[in-house]
Amino acid sequence: MARSERPARPAVHGFWEDTGATKTFTHPLDHALLEQYVPRDARVLDYGCGYGRLTAQLVELGYGDVHGVDPSRALIERGRREHPELPLLRFDALPLPFDDGSFDAALLFVVLGVVTADADQEALLAEIARLVRPSGVLYLSDVPLQTDEHHVRRYEEAAASSPGRPYGVFSTPDGGLFRHHRPEELRELLRTHGFAAEEERPTATATLHHGETTRSVQVLARRTP
Image (tube, rainbow, N blue to C red; front, side, top):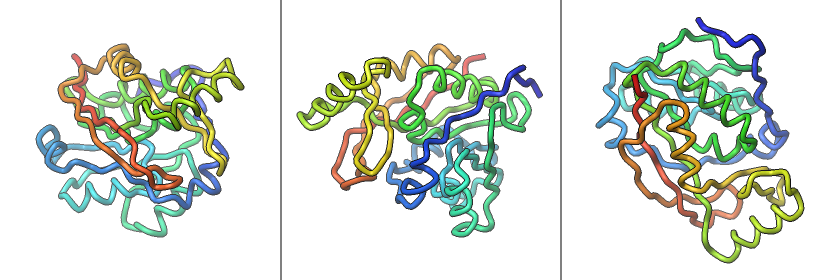
């Protein structure tokens, strides 16, 4: 297994060990889209699995070799209570304890939305690229920049108060820290780390905070040889 000389330690925002660990996650898994790209005998990594919501769905769909990983102790403990049958792993640092190219597919659902720093996102995608075999699949779901007045004001206020942060990073009243992306940022991040988008679908999801609907996007990308 290839390992970096200095492990990258994903910052677990305190929100995910407290209030965030009680939230119900909402981004939907498109079963038909998944099955179009990922056969049921595939080995699948659910990176940022939280409490195992999607990991459990994968098992219910007939995927027999699924691994959920997350840095939040509170979320993994919740997942083990709710889904004691699932293989959920809490990790402290990258790289993860899996061999290079050992997964046929990886899920990355709203992980880039909570890993807000550019350097941390780069480290995360580099690790996913290490773990997914050539021609394997990355199924990403995330939130692009919103265009309504409420969100635009939120982005502008956050950028003015924290000029060192990427545009689109903002905090919520309950202590969360999130990032919405320009679509081209997501595409470039994938390209840089060897993933070619094959399908991109707009969706809509309810937020964690007030349940209002936001625009989201799901991308199926192929690991280039």
